[in-house]
Length: 453
Image (cartoon, rainbow, N blue to C red; front, side, top):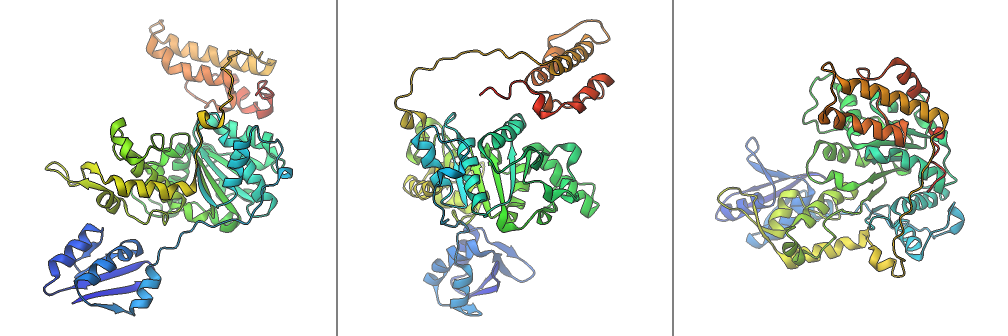
């Protein structure tokens, strides 16, 4: 006898006995169900149960609770992605697209509320994304935007939001760092339309709120985010953008913690020039020494955008799309099932905007590099000299010598201060009091390089 019980929409249990016991056990085990010794049953959420019902019915008649129709209805995989009834409108753009491919990209981005923009480097992903945001704001679909990127591009996002949109003001954009990680609890949280932070700072913010709520000293293995995003407008009006979304591949702490907050955002977008190795067809991956990287890295990204687009768990994905297992590891990958893998990749293309330079810029002239030298203004020059002096003093050291190791350690600070002092971290051990005061007074508008593009 086989019994399938639906306790609620997201929790199911399977009990079995009799002559088909071993076959039923293998079906459950191979599809990621977990055995619960207390209830003597195999438990799972809707993804595995939806997949195994057909296999179990082939063994024998199943007894369903409350009924077969209810179980099937509850376990049906419904994609969260929605088709948007929005038309492209040039009046929403502060600056027109450079070419037809950018207009086409904007049209595709406004079509769905979950997408991956994976254009080649230099094709204007940031411009296209901001232009799509303009459409959403104009139609009053979103009013709050959370952007996570690498630290080096935080201020570039702020600059380009102001450059390519009429819907944002500088005082409506905030960049979060380790010193304002409690921002979402502040009374001014709804004064800001856009919050920008980097991946490492986001992890610190997540850990800070977890410790603050639970009073725990350890931040390992918690399963629920405690960031009070519900105070920041409503879910239907929030948008999250992960720039360089390949950063959430795998099971890193940042990846896990970002996936904990995805349910707060109705609109989710990922940007990356390298979401997977050139989006090669699966059968070409082996020739390029990138076995299965494509499928499993894309799975991690879509698990954030909409987990129901690929209705698999990481374990079932391995077993359904690859031959796995050897004497060293049960999860070692031997080879892909190329036909199934290609079908999966083809189904994902519907939710991906992906173009290459050689395809869209056929008449592109030869590259002409011209160095433009920008003179620092007096404020920037004074600050740069102070930071340089502080770094040199630290490099000189107690032994009165400068080593290559010390130079390399301090070169990053010198480089950042020359580029934009806004992204220089205040170092109490190195910097003079005067230098720290100048850094605190530095404003975004002081950068003399902003007018140049």
